[in-house]
Length: 227
Ligand SMILES: Nc1ncnc2c1ncn2[C@@H]1O[C@H](COP(=O)(O)OP(=O)(O)O)[C@@H](O)[C@H]1O
Ligand SMILES: [Mg+2]
Image 1 (tube, protein in one colour):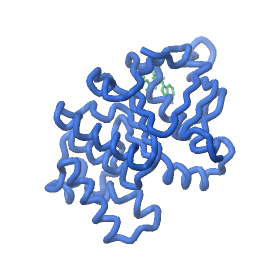
Image 2 (tube, helix red, strand yellow):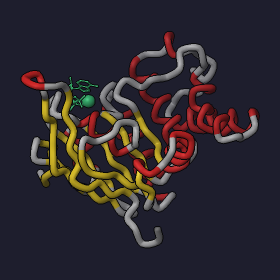
Image 3 (cartoon, helix red, strand yellow):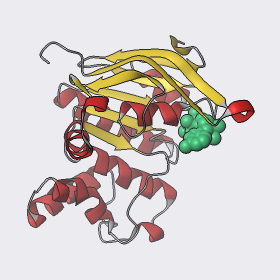
Image 4 (cartoon, protein in one colour):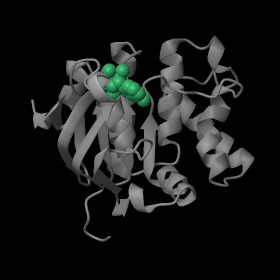
């Protein structure tokens, strides 16, 4: 819908388990991201930050509330169009990276392009360009198992931006990186969002990374509040 913000989350609630073992993470959580927004979410381990990012990306379903990306509500989409829309509109960096173990670094980064129908050599060229951007030229042909944690994280970041999505959702994207690499990938994420007239939302425990985002929000059972 024209004029609709890039991301709208309204009155989200999510918890896990039944009866006495029930864990309510948050309820009444609302969030809007518009063009140019860069937001950091902070909060203690286990408060539901990863769960929230999965809901925003349509990878999990809320117990209540709705999420729309660029005017399209995840709940209204059938599985195939939903996956297609996610691939087009959202770049996601998983906390645990989730690289495919049998693919090289280059193939992991190129995968979203392969899935979008981009030809092999063009997809690999884009992947190599991004790997160079994150300092991993030499590792392009390496399998994830021989890469360090920080190298895997940078491959995951390159994969998230390779289709130049407008919405970037990143779960502790600098958690395995030293300060210099953290600053560099943050520039890549902010730059991608800027260039695409998009938005960046990241979860972090690093006050320096949070400070680079325009807004810092703390997640608590009542939702998100300015820090
Ligand atoms: N699929 C699930 N089933 C049951 N419990 C879950 C599930 N996903 C997350 N949790 C629980 O929800 C809580 C919040 O998890 P998470 O969102 O990963 O927190 P954070 O990212 O803030 O550390 C944790 O206690 C976790 O064990
Ligand atoms: Mg987490």
